[in-house]
Length: 150
Image 1 (cartoon, rainbow, N blue to C red):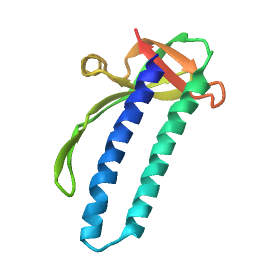
Image 2 (image 1 turned 135 degrees about the horizontal axis):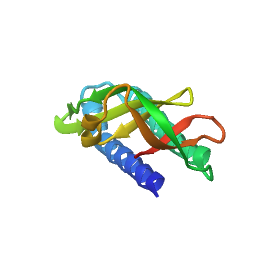
Image 3 (image 1 turned 180 degrees about the horizontal axis):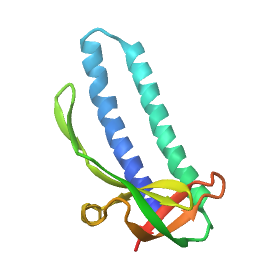
Image 4 (image 1 turned 90 degrees about the vertical axis):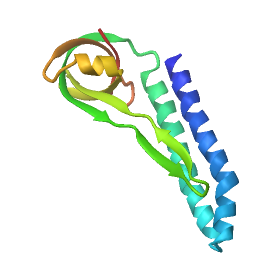
């Protein structure tokens, strides 16, 4: 269920941004005389980025599908906070905001994985702390996906 919520959120955000760009950007570029070639290259790169996001979400889903959820002891290696980034979308300078992330890097069985946590969890956890986690190992990639902290 969480996969579907994440996929819908990513697709919704991508469609919203794509819609704004398709509507606003051509008028801005044509008005400056740049033409459609740059717009075409820009749209192609944007569509490739969206295709990658969809591929990544679908691959992760099938990589973890029907894999058992395991419990294990993990060590927190690093904590990183990426602050929110305000930016403005030209040509009308629409205010946008990329939300901040709190990321904890954990080590389980000699594998390292990143886990996105809430702000409260981030404050409670410290480096070199040992915690109980639920995780899934990818069927195809062997990658470690942290599901939950205990």
